[in-house]
Image (cartoon, rainbow, N blue to C red; front, top):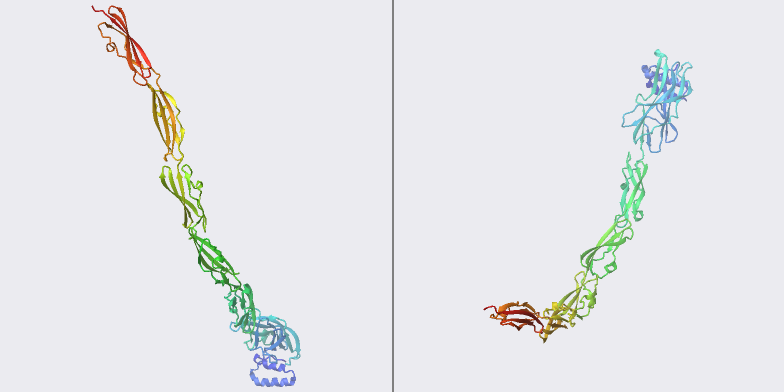
Length: 618
């Protein structure tokens, strides 16, 4: 009958099973020798167990390889093995395990058996084991343990578990820890069930391996500034945005490191990160090549002063600026800011700009000072002349106005007169013409205008001749006057003179000569005849009343209400009287007294006074 020995002797049993070429009698001898060697420590326990155990791995698709667990064969040992370093794209599959078991009599290895594994970093605490089934494959014949024909060796195996050991692992050093187990039942010692393990004496079987994941390339965009020659060289580190690797980066390389003006703008550059195992990762960085180099002036026109009549175009003011650029010929332009100083004087601040294709600008300021020192030139100088005082002396009537030009802008034309009196209305006008530009540059010209007065006044009212009474006023206002006259220069003086010619009595002729005299003694005259006549008789102002007087009374005018008085329109008349005495009776009589008032022209008025003389006294 096959016996189960304590676990500490199972390697010996395994060795016996491996040496299948050895015959049964030899096995028996060896077993007997082993029995005597171990002595009383050989303890009968159960009639089933695991006598060989293997881990089945497929590394990088090379096929399944059996690793000895509880075995000693030509296969590699799992315990303490270094399974190698695994990189991106590598595989490490735990495809299963194999248990070789034996059973005897009523003790049974139950279906199925199992293997257990766990994967963890060498620096970490071990996790719980995960399990996978090992299926029965075959009964392999008698155990040789003399179980009365009921003993049996068996193979339990799983080769398709396809457990990806590397799944989800980060870079590091790892343990793959395995043990196998087989459940069994037994009848000895009261019966029951339990589990056989192949676990390296409780320490399990451990192999090591390394996971070396490829680096992680992280790119950083970079702006590369061209230098003054239009070139720039960058380092791969300048587009590295923090690439990482668990075991160290060996090198960084960029697909392009040298850039020129031809690369202006965004360039896609590949950064390759290589780790110490030669694994690589790439990323794409955008290298933006920029040109911040402004053009350089090679000719900067010097500042200068020009006349206002001169051209201010670049060709006439020290030329156009020129410039060079690190990439291509720049565009040259200028802009002017004109600042008025005074008049036509001004300052032109000319800013030259050189602009390249990337809008980089250099500027240079040229100052052009514009001055005006040239006086205007007369193009029409009015000639001197003589005019009548009645003529207009305004420029349009006296060969003017003057005209002038200026080198900058039209000048202002003006004149001033100095009048010098000669005599009367005669005078000299000294007219100074000036042409003044905006900068007070002045040209002058003198024109002499001689003003003369040779024209006599003209009567506008010539009093008509007339006849008036001697009592009428002969003053101009009463005799169709006064005369009026005008003059071509100024209001003339009006005068008159009378020549009186006596005719008879108060009759006369007044010859009145009117004269209009201007300031230059130019005289016009006119004769008015005023005929003075006297046809009006005197008028009594006292007509002595008739009366009766005694014969003894005086009959003289003074005693008889007289004498008479009279007036005349021309001069005092002569008063006279004549008496006609008519006797009545005795001393009684009638005196008929005729008073007469006679003027110088024999115009007579008469009046009769009756004086009655009576004698009534005895």
